[in-house]
Length: 403
Ligand SMILES: [Zn+2]
Image 1: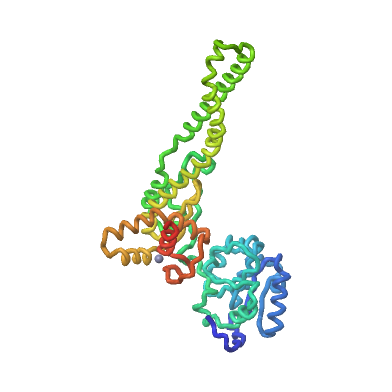
Image 2: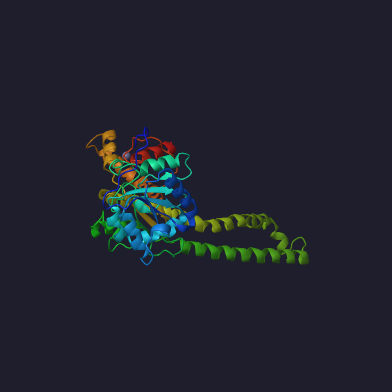
């Protein structure tokens, strides 16, 4: 990224620059930040640092102050922590249009101070870890480099509408979110949600794909469950009455040749019935749970089928539960190309294999992308996604696991 041989000198400020760096942080983290600022100013007396406790102009709004500080600084350091995401970043996201222009040409240096969800607009950037032993050296190297030197660094450049593979576009809740476990989720299909419009503008395509997911026939399990419960209760009552009657009557009138004596051979059947009852009971309790799992599995399959349509528009849907769909940006051209190279160009086999892979694995892949978490580590960097796992790598891994 940068040469380490010589410490670069402090970059000169252009006429529009007031500061070398603006440090944005949450006041909760101010002790750590003021120590850092102190150390930086002590080590590099000529480095002009801007931070809100000292440099915000009283009487102006926080937003105006922030915009001015970002505009007047060569670089912006963001100290990420849960409090930062809650306070500063919220302001930023809520006023994104105001910040977007002033951020475009700027270098952003995210520092991870405390683990927190990384804001979407920063998630493609590499961040510095505050607990890294060489943190201070790495930070000063970035701060003392000219922005032009950093042009190809993965630390920087704010890209507001930049689409990259794996970017989360939308989390879509089902219309029947609060319905019972029995019913598959139903999703609105009439119009394309705003956050998908960037990549998918045709409402007919969107409708067609969503209708596939919505097309799971409503389960009649609820009815079966109720019938089974009623049957179970009746059986319980009958067995109870029979047993009580049997015991009372047999004590009172037990003698050879009486009705109850004659029914003695049926006693084992009754006992078996009583023993089987707990099993039936457990089965009924588990039923609801199994049914929810079954519905989700069916929805995952349908989502895979819908992805045959979505993937042509570089979108993948992921179904993580009955009531939620994730949408991520995923351009699969190169992965598809790999399938065709593997199975032969213009072969029916290649097309079939590709479609089968999409139907079987794309929903889970999309969920992993959306959560930014894969259930396995992957060190092979020969995939088609920079710093990530591409679809063909994911499929290959799943196939190996199944074997
Ligand atoms: Zn690939």
